[in-house]
Amino acid sequence: MVGTGYVGLVSGACFAETGNDVVCADIDAGKVERLNRGEIPIFEPGLEEVVHRNVQGGRLRFSSDVGSSIASAQAVFVAVGTPPRRDGAADLSAVDSVAETVAAHAQRETVIVLKSTVPVGTNARVGRIVADANHSIHVVSNPEFLKEGDAVNDFLRPDRIVIGCADGDDFARDIMARLYHPVCLDHDRIVWMDPASAELTKYVANTMLAMRISFMNEVAALCEKVGADVHHVRHGVGSDQRVGPKFLYAGPGYGGSCFPKDVKALVHTGREHGVELELASTTDRVNERQKGTLARKLKKYFDGDLRGKRIGVWGIAFKPRTDDVRESASLTLVDVLLSEGATVLAHDPEALDTARQHYGDRIELVDEAYKAADNVDALVLVTEWREYQNPDFERLKSLMRRPLVLDGRNIWSSYGLRRQGFTYDGIGVHGS
Ligand SMILES: NC(=O)c1ccc[n+]([C@@H]2O[C@H](COP(=O)([O-])OP(=O)(O)OC[C@H]3O[C@@H](n4cnc5c(N)ncnc54)[C@H](O)[C@@H]3O)[C@@H](O)[C@H]2O)c1
Image (cartoon, rainbow, N blue to C red; front, side):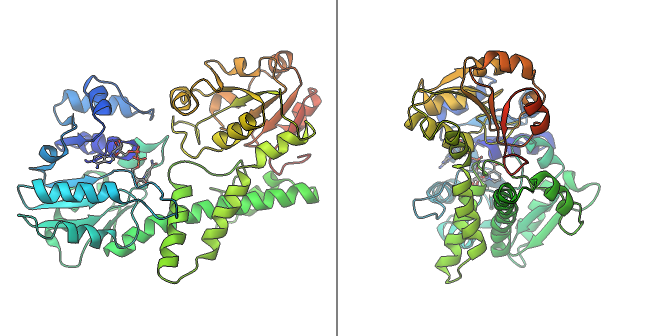
């Protein structure tokens, strides 16, 4: 498993859990050192236990020497980052580098499995890089669909496993089928297809989900204008089985390491091939605008002037049950607050370390939720962690300088809070 981040570590540990011998390799020597000391560098529920059990069982180890780690492997999974370039395209330099390493070090016929999210054509591109290797190297696309926060469960009980494999490549097909056999015992979850379709499937799935969110964010803005409530609209619409209830939540804009970059990359791929994916580009544009919503709403209560205001923020991770802050709506809000002269106190149950790496001492990170309400002019909820769902509002009110709450996830009762004397604002709910 090359690349030991959110995807690689979970996938490597879970493949070890089902009995395979796995080496997780990463060029980040510090990360590998921590893993070898028994530390888990990310927060992911259930992961620590799986890692420790399999390290103890001798099926999982970690190395920063990628070449020797892959030398005798029957399958080499590529789970390195594919971050966005400035033009929106995916940066494939890490994928290329792994392919070059495999071409140089493989000592047997092997399969390279592209698990990183990569644009259409990458399977063929990697095929060209490994074409002259000493041993035959097969290239397979196997995009990952796990959700941070529930990744171990997703890996072991996936909705489906998409595998893009060239027609007639029985060697690769056999290895992939055997690797995923343990998670297909109850029913076959593998959806076989050609590599280009597999590559595209991942981007289309993420863009479809992102599109639902952006659409509901637009609907929420309309609700605010016409006196409707997005909660009711969501229930009414999502209970139609053709629509379904998931990913219909209005909020502060989607974040994370996947949706923003994957939507942009799909638009870029379309343009490269002369196809303007207008729904996808609008989804991205709507989200960029939505990420400014919390700051815009907040400013309204201070006559546009945030200088000297003290603002509490609940939630920095881009969603609950992860410590990942990449592209989080919270970062967008905090950036505006800081640039406009406000002081920020922020809490998150798991993301304080990743937030500290991002902000240093520019914001005050507190280790207990109520401390973020201390003498603040407003409290903004950005990430719907469970512990924020039913706080002691009387206690909050007594701590705050001004009882103004901005509920970026619509998880509190606007009616109840107003009765308790708060000024309440949400996203597309009554009174927003
Ligand atoms: N995070 C998710 O929820 C998720 C879900 C599905 C798919 N993906 C995709 O999976 C890929 C990895 O995402 P992630 O969130 O795990 O990223 P990550 O940044 O957490 O991890 C990537 C790891 O790769 C390592 N790396 C970079 N270049 C390397 C190289 N040349 N050789 C060896 N190691 C190298 C980095 O040091 C890092 O540890 C991306 O393409 C992403 O889009 C992510």
